Every structure is written in C-alpha cells, then in structure tokens.
Length: 585
Image 1 (cartoon, rainbow, N blue to C red):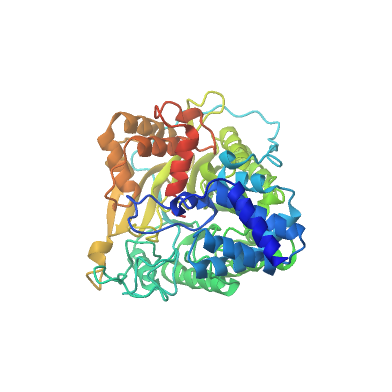
Image 2: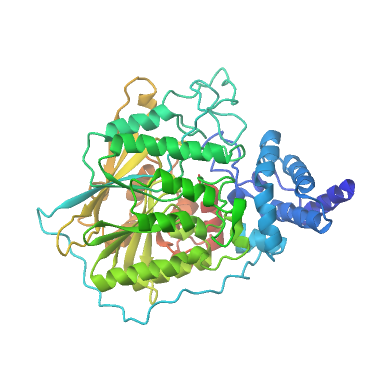
C-alpha cells in the first residue's frame, strides 16, 4: 500500500508538467538582491506544479485512509526528491505542519488545483468557492470630503515610534556560517563559514539571518532617552526557523521581547498588532469557530496576559477572542489594531471558510461609523499590508477605506521588511487618491538588509486635528560599521519630505510621487536604495521598476487597473509573479 501511494504521488508530479529545475520550483529572492542566499521557504515560493503534486498527494493519501503520519512521510520524500529544501528541513517542517494542514484540508471542500489557486494565484487554479462575499455598510450617506490642509505653524506634533518585524533568533551565534544550506543561517547548527567568508557579525549580518538579542536591546537603549507620544508595534517577534518551532518557543519570544520593550519604553503607551510569525506552524490562525487545542487561544490568551498593562479590558476581550482590538489613544483619536492573518493567502485555515473571519471587517465598520458619528479620527495598524491579502478580503477592505476616507486618518503596516507604501484611490474612477498605507521597514536584517525603525510625525492632539501623517523618518544600523565596534550607532537614513522634496505627504502627494518616479529615474533609484534601508547594489530597471510601481499603486489585491501600460512587454500577472518572488517575509 505504501508503494502504491508513492507511485501515485510520482505520477501526480509527472502529470503536473515537465520536471522543472529547483529554481523553477522555488522562486527565491532575486540573486541580485541577495546573492548566494539559496532558495526560499514558504507557500509563496512554491511553483504551481510542485504545489499541485504536494496537495494531490495529500488528497490521495486521505482517500486511501492513510493517517497523517503516513501521508507526512510520503510528502517529506517528495519534498526531498524535488529539492524544495534540505532533507532535515523537509522532514521537520512537514512534521510540524501536518496536523493543522490536514485538518484544514479535510474540513474544506477544495480540490488540489483550487487550493493552489488560493496559495499561488489564479495562474495556478481558480479559487472562487468562498470569494463572493461582501461586507454590509450602514445606510448612512458618506459625508462631504473636505480638502486636506497642513496644520498651522506651531501646532502640536505627535511622535509615533513604529517597530515591526523584530524576528529575534535566540540561537544566533556570531562567527557561524551566514551562507548555510538552511532557510535561516548565522545560528547554532549553521556550521562555520568557508575560508573566504567572514562569520556572522556581532550585531547581525547581510544574509538570510535574523537578529541576536543584544542588537534588539541595543536598539531599545538607543530609543529610551528619546521622546515619543505613542508606540505602534506590528508583530513578527520570533525568528524564521519556521520548520523547528514549538508553542513554548513562540511564547518565550513573545514574553522576552514584550518585557524588553516594556523595560525600556514603559513610560510610553504601546499598542501591538499580531504578526504571522507569532503562531506555530507559521501562518496558522484558525478563525474563532475552531475550538480546543487547534484554536489560537493559546496565543491570544498569552498576548492578553503579556499586554494587559498596555490595553484596557474591552480591548483585551476582543484580542483574546480573535486577535484584534480598538482603543482610544487620544481624546479624538481611535486606534484599530487588525489581525491581518485573517486576510492572508498563507493562512491555510481559511480553506475552510474565508468569509470575513472573526467578523473583523464588519466590526471595523462599526468602529469607523461610531468614530464618524462622534467626529473622531482613526488610525489603523496591522501586520500584513492590504495589497498582498486575499483578493476578496482586500477588495472589501478597500471599499471600507473608500467609504470612511474622511475618518481614517492613517494606515500603518509592516511584514515586507522593506520601505514602501500603497496608495488607495476612489473606487468610481481610480483617479483620486483617498488614503495611504505606509509600510515600514523591519528591525531584522532578513534578507540582506540593515536593521531599522521608523518615527512618524502626526498632526497632534488639539481640537480639530486631522491626525494625518505629516512626515516620517527612518533610522538604520549600518552593519558594515557596527560590526567593527562594541558601541554601534543608529543613524538617520532619511526623512520622507526632505528626500523627495515634498511640502506635504497626503494621499495626493504620494500619488504624485509615484508619477515623479515614472518620469525621473534618478529619483526612483533613490527610492530603490531607501526601499532596501540603504543596502543594495542592484539597479532596478525595466521589469523591476514596472513591478515596483505597480505595487505602490495596488492597495487592492489582484487589481490590474492601475498597472496598465507600465511595461510594454510585461503582463500584470508577470508583474505579480516578479514581485512575489522578491518577498522576504
């Protein structure tokens, strides 16, 4: 019987198309952006043929009444045979993921082609079983939109410290191999580097490595004496060793970094959001209708306990239920912290039902309507940017932003590890910019980056404040210099208005900036350098530039409307594939 299952899997793979090279199976980060780093690891990098082979194998195994261990053994063999990852990573990852993935698979009604369409996009299959749903907006007319104006000179400014994607690696070992065969290096088990390669740096490394605790603590020591009014912290605390993590590991990371931030920044109000790496398996965030040990209660309850001194009781209640919350942070400013894992293509629990998981978007509408009725403004924070979410979730969110553009003062996200933004346009004509999702760079170095953080300058706390973003500054730790000293210096990389010669940074200004990128290639190359936190040797031309600008215009997932004519020979799907291959998260 075991041989029969192996034979079936082999036939499935052969039927899925000609055997591609390893680089065809896994779209690793661009070699020019990350030389010598090897292949990526995660659903986003899996090719269509390999995806169909894997899930057809699972499907066959379950139809033959194999238990999860038997199916896992065969899928592990396929992973090794296709060279999707090193042998030990294949075995450990599949052992870790098998229960949750198989449970979600059994409870869903999707075929292999449909599940791969969800994970990899419509080029690999049509996933539309749950795609036809819409949120319900209140039957209240949208108020007239007043033109945005900068505050009067001398008006108060709110300084918001923004931290995202810390990715602490508790097993980081200075001197170990930064170019190991595993998806994460510079750590215990990575071995020693070759004769012509320096070992992992004391404070971090330009490679596929996360950060030692001493770098994170050094950052917080640098921040401690500075003045901030608020701290927004949008998740991804653990390292990228996603094939070898336990719930105990994840809770250790949560509590260690929470305690560290509280110790150094405890005199400031701190508001976190849930990242996709907080769970194990990674991206495993069942909707609230999943109960028992398979639910996310173990994580949300731990967050509620760790963050109880930061959040009021009502916010803790929704956090513990589904990982999102709302809280008033200033007299006329409401903060919404979204659980963006409920929009994630990689959250395999959404195979069961992706219709507004946890009722989060409908809840958001209620928060926004109440704020509109009261004349308040709202900031939205979250981990995954809306433009890379599942299409149906993203389009509903876009619709909400359009309806409440006069109430939503700002949106803040992380996840991509790089410095970018997404512009939202009016739904009727897609010609008027209505909002901006600012996407801040990571604290971690993964992959081939400097560590970084951001400070937002917000219209301050006074009557009739707009609470809009007025500017932002990005700071980095230059690893080349830092690894030569015991006392590294965090330095200002740039300010948004200064770098691009902007008077204001309202939505229309960010839209105009994109247009300037198209006309002025030197300006765009400056953006490309800052996008990588000041560390890239690559010049982004032609296809790269078209895909980059397409991403800046696409706050609504899988929407080709604003990417037409960016490149004569490149389709929207090719732009998406190019951009997905560059994702580092």
